[in-house]
Length: 236
Length: 373
Image (tube, rainbow over all chains, first blue to last red):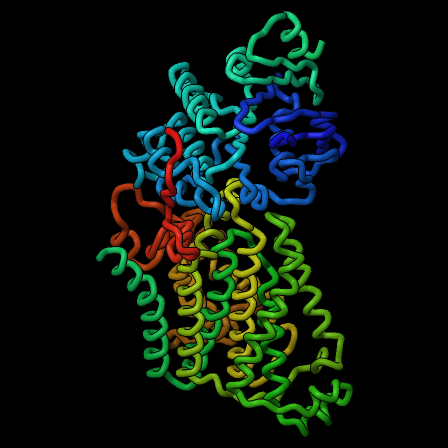
């Protein structure tokens, strides 16, 4: 059976700068997979390439079919949602308007796993601040709205780029609780994080990325050799 | 009640301004009436610019190309065929012999503007930011050169004369009103709402499944159609046209009007077009000399554009969103107070929406059955 997502020797360059040298990985249905690594390792570029937002070489296969040449909007309609770094909410629009845009890519005829009620239960602030301008929310609240907006497309795979960035420890805990609930309904997660230990513990499979290459693969959420992770993280 | 009132005000404000200019202009001298008609036609061009620039956030320097195409097509095909065959012997035969009515020429100009902008947009709408601006400027340059040097499709570098003068005060006002109604109707479509969302954050918009390219292309085409229509009004106002009249100066003046009024709202476009149109008309007259009682003032040639430029800079410094703050007419007073949702949050439905996600029969935020919690 084909994995939900497979990256095959993915390479991303910006002019002469090589952001991702070679990344090969798989994400199965309902599975959480993370990419950890230092700044500049190529994590965000990998996610952008999966979403078709940057040009890449190699191949991205969704359910065994190449997505080469597809633009982000097409990927969204195929069940891939992304929460980019920095949340990218429509700042001058209300929370409700942001959320209603999230429903654009819902697929007709598919049995829905996620609906507005489920999302509102998951993020009570949505009901509380529905008419408030998104730009007036705190960072943690914006992150919740960004994840909620992505979930409202009822995706099969959600790409999350540093969802805990800039959040308080309590808010970080809340983010990981939310991720657990998302995985619980069968949505696969490809997570990019700098909080390596936390992410590796959470995910079924983790890839340590450094200098645009995968240096280590960890499965099962247990780190048997912490020193190996540290060395891979710093590209030694 | 308030959203409906806001919707009415959004259309009534700009249309009232058209009526005020038309009525006031009709009460003036014949020479001043000409200026008032020019203000109405210029405002129509600014509305055409607004449809694309205001809604997409992409600055285009090429919309006057579509004005030019509309103006030359309408002017050429309504001018006397006998004159065309003698003064433009190199014209394609169908252009030399075809004669259409003035009304038909307005429709044709709008159609040509839309087709031309659609074709240009197929290439240009994939670009953003500065690249898009430069590329649209290239379209203006290409159009200018083609119209100036290809004498099989027009008068070339000479002036196209003997065009019937049919843009009266009434025609100018009705034409401007039509452009306003089209722009108003468009900005309440689902496509425009999504375009406005993409204006704020194209990356996020694409990630949500919005085809930025497609919605920009729609706006560019409608804008081109309105610009072509305005071009026909323009040529039937002047009675003649040369390529220099639909080139850099007009591009700069109309963009200045849009900036000064406020590029983000229809009210801003109309107010800027009318307000600066009046200033522009006064400055044009002043270049030929105007009398203030016993004092005659004559501005040096070219001062008109200089003053418009200075005005634009001053407004950009004091009010970057234009004198209207890019708000619709009375929006400040009629908006719902808590959580006012600016740009894309036009009344009349949800963003995804409005006419909306509901276009396909589903709810704004659909609630399919839940399988797990």
